[in-house]
Length: 124
Image (cartoon, one colour):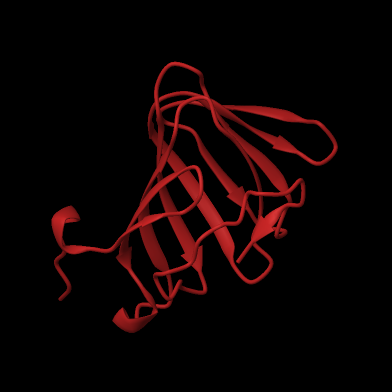
C-alpha cells in the first residue's frame, strides 16, 4: 500500500502554477496522480505528446480551448480528458487559482516542466 501526504511529495513549478506529484513512475502504478494548481489569470498553451491526461476540477473556474476554438468551461465537478494528445489552451479565471486533480498515463518521472516562453505549445 502507498500512502502519501501533500507535504511528502515533490512540488514542481510547471510553468503557470504548481503540481504536487503524488504517484510517479517510480511507484509502479502505471499512472501519475497530481494536484495541479493553475495560477489565476494565466493562459497556458499545452500538448502532451507522450501522455494522455485527464483533469477533474476541484476549485476555481477556467476554460479549456481546443485548437479549433471550441471553449469548454471548467468548474468544480467538471472533468476533461485529452484522449487524442490534444493541443489546447488551459486558462484560469482572473480572480482565483484553478485547482485540478490530474491523472497521466503513462506516468511522469516527476520533474517535468513546461516551457511557456514562446507561442508554441509546450509539451512533455
